[in-house]
Length: 208
Image 1 (tube, rainbow, N blue to C red):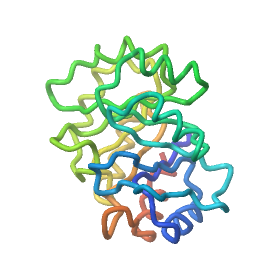
Image 2 (image 1 turned 90 degrees about the vertical axis):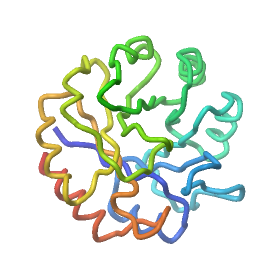
Image 3 (image 1 turned 135 degrees about the horizontal axis):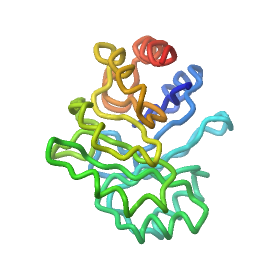
């Protein structure tokens, strides 16, 4: 099965253009002001952005109406909920025809049973490393913990994926892994992706 390639934390028009040339299936834009990769108040996705790349807006504990306004403004295909959003939030967004990716921050104490109540109202889960920040930490978690997940909903793997560890993703072949989410592991500055490094990671996971 082909793994989907998602590049997150984009905001610079020129860098966005360079990344689109690699044809990722998904691209993420962060609408969370406390993030080092926040898009800012005057952000606009470039007019020539390829239609085939799914647009993902990343939000943290944002009001549902505010999220929906950004969905309309930026023609987002998916919202990625990176905070403590409720099942009802996911349900409402799903009813409004938005794709939903719910993020869970993983450490050795995470209870994967938490995901069950969200399953009817999401398209994908995204499993990231639990830190004091909301993503973009550059740190990976113990991927062996994913064996505790019931695999009912396909998921993105995130958290410190880089050239050094991308090959180890093959160990998750028996799981419901849908794609990988690359952010700080292929950057030379927050929000600016290192294109050769990104291409190398994409080549590695293409052999999944």
